[in-house]
Image 1 (cartoon, helix red, strand yellow):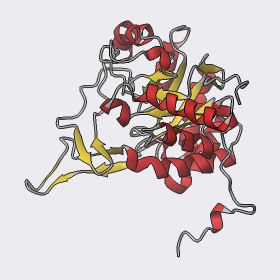
Image 2 (cartoon, rainbow, N blue to C red; image 1 turned 180 degrees about the horizontal axis):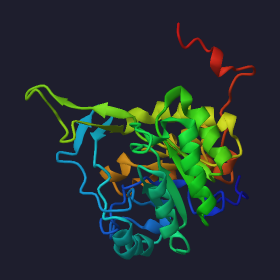
Image 3 (cartoon, rainbow, N blue to C red; image 1 turned 90 degrees about the vertical axis):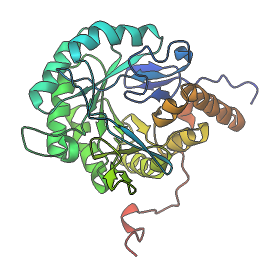
Image 4 (cartoon, rainbow, N blue to C red; image 1 turned 120 degrees about the vertical axis):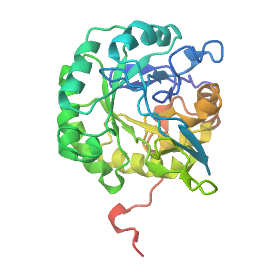
Length: 321
């Protein structure tokens, strides 16, 4: 064990990151918020807040409500628009020292194409993450990425144009996650981020009103960990060679190790990073301690190593008893 040369670095379809722990979309703010709080060089990568073609003011306040084992939230994708983002926010995020993945969001094919075109040739953009949980204005659907065919159409267009790795962040589509994942993989994405938060509602019984200004929102936090593990496990078994980044419920090194064992190549930290900006660094340190304790060299040595009984069939596990 003493002679093992240990490294936390992982390679995600052409993007190499120093640790398998990334900061999830929007949780590093605009780049200002983290200054002096954390050594970002010790973070695998930072995902920007989701950027749209034009600026969005976002939803009314309040935007966050505490929930058991998590938060219910909605921001309405507040952002300054792609032009201002490239001029002001991206340089700050890059100067922090970690690779920057730009999250893009739109409600039409044209918007995704224009966003991807605008990012072309930017050496400071390490990868693109496609936000697929917004509405589809062209087809009149509430969530663009809920349908495999539409998700593949949008992701394929972005992947064909992009000169950097492209990761599709899939909605929480339950049993359909493998179908959507397979479709976008065939369309050419580099990898997947699993998954966007599920829909949620917070209520204030005293005032007979919803807790959020937007009324409805999304659930994030530790409560999601088992759901994320299941999605990662199912998709990794179906697509073992496709890089999968797990997001949802990771707050400790042990949580991250569980995701890797289920088949993830890396993890993203969201709510935990909002509570404690140092959390992504501490989680990576936890992964390092686990590897050392097992005498292993890298996160790749535990990826997908969950011990599943021979003959296990996920379709016949008695889920409806």
